[in-house]
Amino acid sequence: MAFSFIHTCPANTAACAKHEHKQRLPVAFPHDMHMENYDCEECHHVYDENKNNIVDTMELYSDNPDIMCSSCHASNSKINTQEAFHRQCIGCHNKEAAIDEATGPIMCNGCHHHAVDASMDDDLIIKG
Image (cartoon, rainbow, N blue to C red; front, side, top):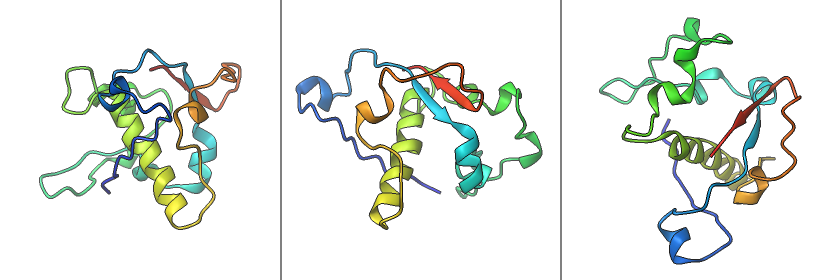
């Protein structure tokens, strides 16, 4: 599934247009909550030449470093980790909002805020 990317930063500046933001606060990603509502393959993916997701779902288990976004989306990748998160997360939130479904935040500060609590067991703390 391809996700569109809509940049929703409230600051309309030249730096914003170039995505040259200062480092933002970390994001707490509620993985368990997403697992209740979506199939794993909606986020985890390996695409073949026909753009079919051929991820091996047997590999999708906790503590497998090969399924972390950064294992494929590194700083030298075609799509780096930050861009991958933004495309996937904001893209899905925008898609849900477009069909009037409840959704997560689409503005930068909706995810990047001071309320990140590293003690929450099901949350993945995402920096960047």
